Image 1 (cartoon, rainbow, N blue to C red):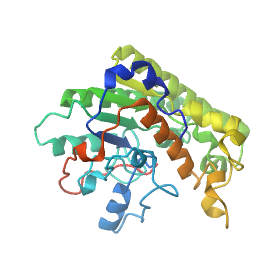
Image 2 (image 1 turned 60 degrees about the horizontal axis):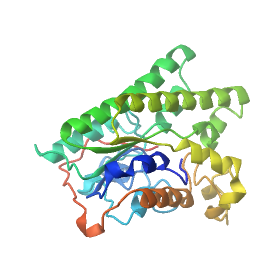
Image 3 (image 1 turned 30 degrees about the vertical axis):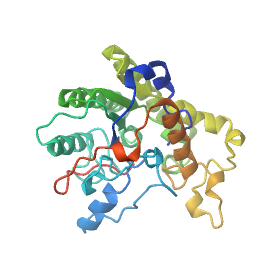
Image 4 (image 1 turned 90 degrees about the vertical axis):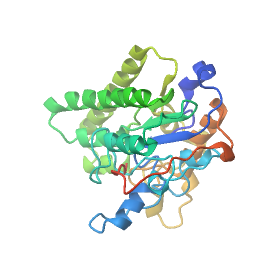
Length: 299
């Protein structure tokens, strides 16, 4: 899920970030640029995955810098289906992505001038929505804590500039609507889980009191598109464009049952470019990845 003012909260502290030498991404299918596909091609028992979970380049490929899957030697560790503690593809969750990043550092410190983006939440909330109510709140708080621990891990490795995205309201996705057969009460409960996740994350990051760790408000602009679709040229907020013959994806918010179209990804990239000093392609440092990393992501 995406939005046009993705990096809203970065503006107030842009002086803390300055020029960036590279962009490293950890996340799920909203950020994956080919890791899940690489894995599915290498491991026959894993269902084939798309190279992108959209109808075009995702947000991090629109920043004017090389964005290559970590399994091919790049800086994007995101894997479709990843969550903050596990992945739909085995061994592809956030901890595995961070472990592979550390392996690739080979004992060196992380680049302090690079930007590190943690973009998780949707898959966690979708899974937690199927749990018993008594376990849902602990699971939500556990996911938030996983992200805070990931910030600590990155800082321990030498990272200094970190953005942590909150979660989009997955109750609006065709997948979740279909899963709950349109039951309004159930969908409201899923939406509430998103609110709890996002409030907890905002509080946790605020408590870090570190100007170099910023919250990315994904959900607010996401909801803005649903509240004002005509302002974004959208005519369909409910159907996956890929399932409608002859559909113009630019008029649809969703590409498939759980992921947005390319126009939403461009909106995110526009905000990143407006609010950060993104490096020229020639200046980006790529870290070589060794072996078939420990997988991550499908969102």
